[in-house]
Amino acid sequence: MVITGSSRGIGRHLAERFTDQGFHVYGCSRSGSELTVKDYTHFRLDVTDEEAVRAMLTSVRKREERLDVLINNAGCASMNHALLTPLKTIQRLMDVNYTATFLFSREGVKLMKRDSGRIVNLVSVAVPLKLEGEAAYASSKAAVITLTQILAREFADMNVTVNAIGPTPVDTDLISGVSREKLQKLLDRQAIKRMGRFEDVSNVVDFFIRPESDFITGQVIYLGGV
View (cartoon, rainbow, N blue to C red):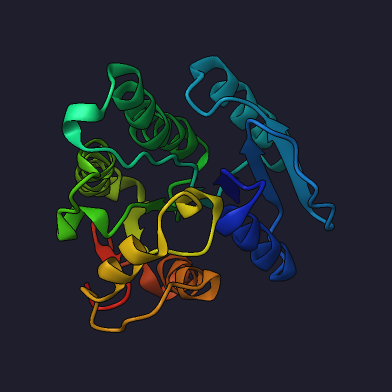
């Protein structure tokens, strides 16, 4: 299993959860990782660097010969009015949220044998909620949703499913700069008015990667009743 953005937050939780389940997990981030559990290997890289992505997955292939599950979790956020959003912010959001997902999916599927394979992408409720102040961020995640749905069709003949999860706000560094007032307004738009938990996300990942879920692809599950 490969998990991007695994040094902290949701990615770290998923790495811990799936090593506990017996997976050999390979994670990556720009920083190092303090996770020292058995069967976890960390790569320090920029997920937008095509050669670094290829090198990581080549290393995984040499060690494991195949890849069963890819979780594209790495992401970044920026919350600004469109008039106050500089070009470099737009480019960074698209590179980390969309381009990295594309690169890992393109290279990762080459390691998946033709009897099975699972790709799970992390998106956001900012897309269906059309959140003000998140035009660039929500657009980058909308691109990942479209990518998910197209790859689901392109990879179907390889018996690889591609699905996505759209979490509500989870208490991670990604939302550390958001005011409590703004968070509450967002939660009030959900059917279930609470913050998301790591376990809410991993529960859906568990469902998508089960062998019995081989007939489920191209789907997006938003949490919280959005």
